[in-house]
Length: 306
Image 1: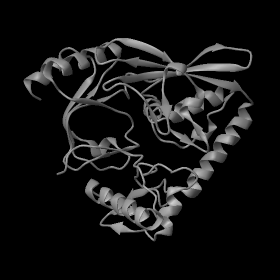
Image 2: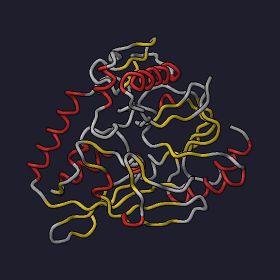
Image 3: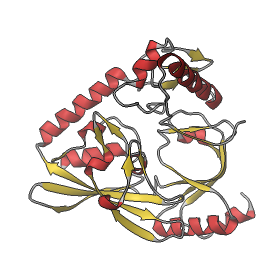
C-alpha cells in the first residue's frame, strides 16, 4: 500500500484492498487487478473517498455485485468502490391503502429485497427472482425481465454527487431507458424507494418460484457468466439470432457461447476476458452479415488489454 492510500486508510472506517484481481468480484470470474478496491462503511466514508479521489486525481467507478461486468485481462487503473458492506438493508416505510413502500440500500442483493417484499405481502417484483445483482446495480442498469423493469416500481433514488452531496431524485426527475438510467458521470446510487401493491404471501412466493423455474430452464445458471451479453433488438430475441447463424455452443478455449442460451457466454473454467470478447465479436459480426441486425452489448466492459 502506498503513502497516498495510507492517508485514505487513516480517514475511513471501511477496508481498502490494493492491486486485487477483479476476477474474484465478478460473476464471469475473469479480469485483471484494480489499483484500489474500497469498501466504504457509510456515506461519510464515501464522501471522504470521493474527496481523496478528486485530490489525488484518481479515476473511480462503482462496483456492484459484478454480475453484468466484464473486466479486461490487464485490469483497471484507478479505484473500484463497492457499496456491498456499508449500504445494505431493506426496511418498510409507510403503508398506503393499496400500496406498501420499501427502502433498499444499493449494496443489498436483489434477492433480499424480493424476500423482504414477499414476507411483507408486497407484490410486483416477482419477475426479478433469480437475478443475481445488487439493488444499486439493478437500478443503474434498469434491469428487467418478462416485460418488467426496475423503473416500474421505483419511487425515488438516493444519490451522492462527486462532491459528496446527498441528493434524492423522484422517478419523475429521472430518465430511464432500456437497460440504463441517465446519471451524470461519477454519481453514486446509494439506494432506492419502491412502491408495491399488497398481495397474498403464498401467491407471491408461488409467482417467484414460477419465474425462477423459467429462468433455470432457459439459462445456464450453473456456470460463470454475466447474463445476457447483448440487448434484445425490438421484436426479436438475440439468442434466437445467434442460434440461427450457427454459433450456439461455439467454444474458444474455456469461453463458450452457451449451449443452453445463445445470448449467454459462459466460463468453462479458465476463460480469459479476451476470449469472451472475441466470441462476442464473432456473434456480432455474423448476425449483422447474415441477418442485417446490429447487436449492442448489454454487459459493461472496462479495463485494459493485458
